[in-house]
Length: 449
Image (cartoon, rainbow, N blue to C red; front, side, top):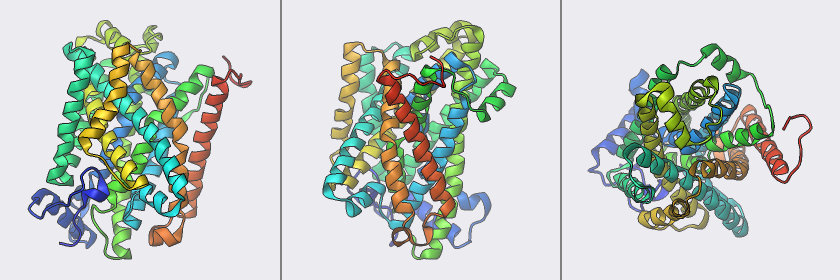
């Protein structure tokens, strides 16, 4: 058939899917049936579930654990609105990214290479690679901590095991895109299940949760850094780049009508997957607020302390469930981080490296940090701040392309979408400027210290 998925345009390997890969081809056939109206209801939506769930794992990675634990333990429920705001931004931006792939058949880095100067493309690639390394650092450290605390495996050995596990999962791509989508989606569901259990254990104040999800608050200078960290941990640069790569050739539209239909299903999937990830992020923060801040343990500022403090407060079962969710998060998000890194390199500069080489290279910062004994959770928070500072770059590029009718055709942004995305870029940039000003020693008059 003419519309198979080509991994060289999508994620990791420079090979095409052979026709014998039934699961992948059945998914493509099911998508085509849905587009033509032969499948209805949930049966029509099911074959489209996948790309947004892969992207959503980046929004529930160990960096989220670190920033949400610190925010919840220090400020209780007060910063839940930041999680909600970040997740709404994520829904908007990921939907735009996925739409870009459907409309153009190219991913965001490829379009940057096509329309921007070579110097600019290489500069964007360099900055994006730094962001990708910061991402991988957070994800690797999370999985390593999970193995260390759950099974007592030394940190250095846990790092190697994490690298091996993520590499083996990435090898699923040789069987087509569908097995990898299902595997990662299953990890996301397991993380969600863990936080359903933690909600039962922690018994949060849901009236406070509801109130602070919609009422903004910034109490002091420390909360600004955490707010930026929460946004950096939630809206991820590599996920914005990756999502366009996941949709660009998954199902190739034959005409404008099919593009519109594909985008309708894509929007529904983004809403489901990112909404699910948002609920998990909210649960992370309100669990920390209920378990730590409400019990007078506001000094819990790292993952190790959270695990040790959970045991006497909520019991060993709760502490174990927390670590299991961290382990699932670290491994799955590290897989997605590697996929994003491949799309970034191949798109911006036109070449790629073997997955095992990227896996080893991106492991090195984590190995060095572990060997030097640097505090893992503080490293996680700093990595999320780095991501937030880099974030405006892919957002601006995404807005630029998706508002151009000559590039997007029938899927060009409506004026409202462009306006909302510009607001997202302005909010993120403003928070980053506050952070930089504060880091350089400046005081913010309207916020206490």
